[in-house]
Length: 421
Image (cartoon, rainbow, N blue to C red):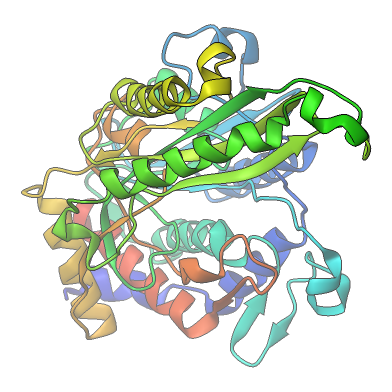
């Protein structure tokens, strides 16, 4: 580690890092809410104060929705903002760190400490609250790297960029807009929680909807009708068969994960009266997209499974279920295994955290596929937190891990941007 790199690490303000994380958690930036915009402007203000060249723009939601590659959304939205800050000389940034400011809803408040998911309370060595690891810890780490690069007084031979985006949780509209805006980098790290691994690939995830018809009748004469719930049962079994088929051969990069391409039904709605036979069931779920598989091919596989199940069923043969694809549409994504960014990240982890990091793949969709696909930017994940805590009422992040990961990201930035005194 040279003197300039050491100076960058020494300039990391650990207290400000934790304070920023607590401040971020206390803003209830659920996907689609105005609080997303609040945090985007918060980031823009801090990057401006640090001397970054900041691009802040309001998303043209109508134009984005009309784009043929629109990634899909699930949450209602009236506005959104993009923020990109660049530090250093002109040119394509050597590294971009990216984070999303939105979080998923809280769920049952009774499951949270003091019924407050937005507390940012610190107990022991952990910060708690919605978004603590997914991914406000990553956003706080990115900002701490930006602050350290400035505070260290080093000169960057190549520019450094920080991207903050909205709408990652419901499809990636913010990342999509950032790519369409023209922002690029030689390489990017998305600081999602990676449980200490370097995530070099993502499976995809497509939201689907099934509309299963029945025939209404009085509950006392149910044989005169046909329950949409009963009609759904063979389709549910067909989805389970499809899941087994799609997970029969698993890429070793998933490191023993037995189900990287899950097919899950998340909501089921049927009927409108307890003594009536339901004439419609609506089921919504997600379909895992295999590495290297196009979303179109994945959709076709599910549609074929549903059609074949309908053809075998006496009721569904004449009253087939309808399949549609609302909501988020996450393709899979992967960095070239030979790209030097992988080795650079693993080496930085060894130099700052004194350990060897494993390469892995994530079974969920993320902005990675938009950076590698639309943007053609070699991209991987490395960030603080255990994904097992994400989207759960026990969401938390370990402060020592947050600091270690921030140091790794800072060293990576110093090296890729050729920091010198």
